[in-house]
Length: 437
View 1: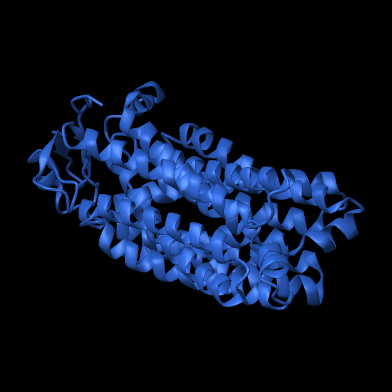
View 2 (view 1 turned 180 degrees about the vertical axis):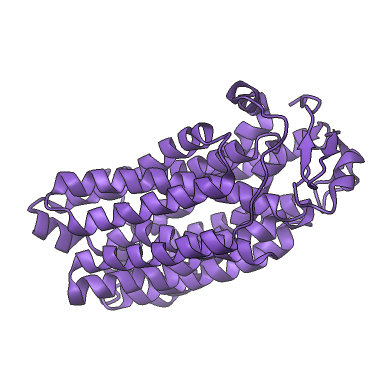
């Protein structure tokens, strides 16, 4: 795995810490800004919505810009957004800084994922995405608790300064370690890139990603009150259990990334099914402290075990537009991260209790399983676009015209993508045959 991919993972650590750290900083922010805690909570929603909107918009806007320059600009804007948040004199300024940071974060995710995919062979896509997602997992294990610790000891603004410093380190890494990824000789327009959205498999992947992520975060968003009010644990246990979830997420990402390249549909089906079973178990045994703690760890593992496969699947079916593929995956995850907590809040407001969020989450992941089954059925008799990585040594496998849903029978026909090698070693993809699905 190229060192540059790990640099992208380090950058994602800073992005992920900023995205999730506000959950432990809402009370001091609300007090300092003289707003209610629900109003302060809108800062989290603003970030998630900014990610959903910003990913496709920035991916389209930067389509013809050099990848490295784009990454440098986005991580710089993100870091400046953290500085603006740390210095924000009013709630309104802080709100705007969160939206700007979210837009830059979404763009970096989308472009960074495309760059990571470009630097590895097709057979290592899921592992490359696992490294990036691993940065997010480590952010949950270390970054978010560290932000809460700093907020408690030095004030909430210190957490923003810490993320700004991490962003500066990431910027140095991007400047010095990310190679120049040449743009294709043949520039496709936005209209050509948008053709991927005519493929049913792309929309199935969006649905699976949003529902799989949303189902887990439907319960995870309300894990703290479930642990204290239902399981009867003391407040001091909450950070420990959240850290256990993060440890499980890191382990799941590592294992899933190594398996998904060979058994992509197998990982999707087994991982989402396991999450469904664990959510049902959490709903049934939430009153048991030991069960609640153990299930939190296992749920982190199963949720992030599927994440590399979800990312790789989108790049497989939308490989003709890798930047938009990364943007679409980012938007889909954040749709789930927004819709899941909303559904959880709805069932709580309906008087069903905190444990009901696990039932609601299991309902979402059950639909995700059904969509994976439909996608697999279509895959077995469709021609899925597979494109070669610019730096891939295995482009010849793509041009042979086979695409195997690993672990599920013989190879099925795939769209043949013609690759022309330039004098500098760059490969330019000629227009592929349109996918039937």
